[in-house]
Image (cartoon, rainbow, N blue to C red; front, top):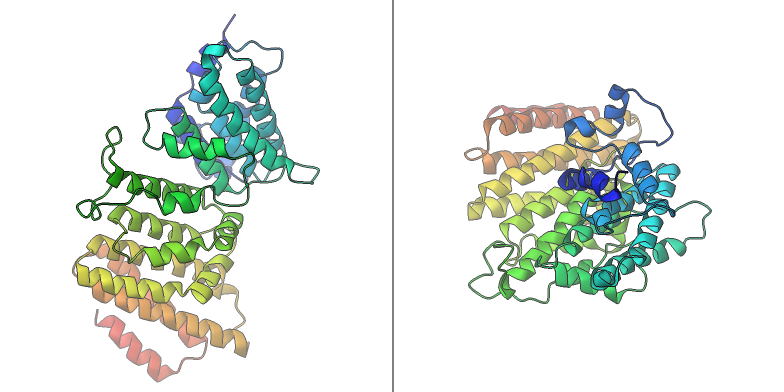
Length: 413
């Protein structure tokens, strides 16, 4: 008879972790789809492209962990990434996926509880991790399993990786957080403030360096590792409007945008901040989060200012990243918003004309700052998008003479 550990041993852990991080949120468990439809449903992230299909692996995990089954190596349930996939399923839009995920989590917890006494230390950590998630879910009074933000499940998936490796430099930080909590707030970014504003203070010699080795990390490097880790969780977890709302409620965007130009920000930290903002700019189905970022956080003005600072400091990579962010933002606004605006509405015309004008100014700054350092293809995209902006400005009432003068400026690039 095939043992559970033999089945779980066939799973590629890294592939399973990738599948959990990029869990297809809108995939439905009950739908029978052909390969092409399935590929489109998960955004070309099926097993053929390096991802496992959760419609197969979650029921498989539930069967392996059924109450009457014998699991010979309990930690294989964690090592294989199955627990991480079950956590990730809690962010699915499909209630059936979430229900199967909760079933798998509960069964894994029961099997870990039966583990040998020799595994008592590991058992305590994993049992408590599952218990704080279950207690968080229990707070909901809804009949079905509450949908958890992807940012929270991304944290849990990454935490599983850390907790499986006691020698990992992040182990102490994550394990202390897990063991100190009786329940997990499922609608907030876990432990963000403590990890982002790390207690490990940098020394003068290390304050301008990036994170170093993993196995030999001194105090001055630990603060960078913790900050990069939580920023990576934000970057991977920013999947839809729910994740945006969680960050907005905790003032995370204000914190990371004000942190970006500070001397404490390493090159990697800045790159992660821009990547998070780019994820907001490209959220599916709606442009509303991006418009809120532009109106309430001054995103475009902030980008323009950072591009100037990057040019003055010679940070060509930063200029390129920020330019790509603006290109993404314009594509979202143009495709999801401007195409459906009533140009005859005076109020709407004034707002969107101002919005297009602001994009024009930012594109001009990006083009001027990056004309000698950015790849030619990006400069061509900037010029094309700037011409689109001018057409939008014209449709919203900007005078012909103004458009002619601005167009001449673009042609001179």
